[in-house]
Image (cartoon, rainbow, N blue to C red; front, top):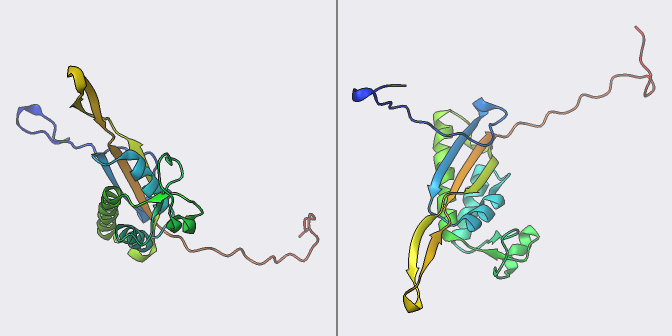
Length: 187
């Protein structure tokens, strides 16, 4: 840790990810903490990105902003309307959460610039891990009839994602043994 005047530490903790990539040199990470964006919408949007390549994920989020495609809602489905665009994902309910999509696009852009610094191939990057967690609620108040006050809470999020280079599929070598299955050959 680097110390400043007065003995204070200038060490910045980068935070801990819930999962580390298998090939650390072939992956890049990005995260956001205490983001003022709805947890439920962001969780559904993040699950739609899991497993997509970087270019497909960016194009998909752009289509969501243009209302050409929707984000399928699978877990938090209470009072979510139905749309024909959700058929593509085998769901019936979907929405177009603009603010969540903008935050996720910002994180993808950040991870992409991290990949450039690490000299990774941007065309082969895949969203291998994405996770959204509930953050501590912000507290406000709303005024009700007869002089009462009720809480008016927000539901922010922590978002983390890992982009990994897609590994080329390795073919299994052809079987070179001529013996029967289950028998070992003597040399």
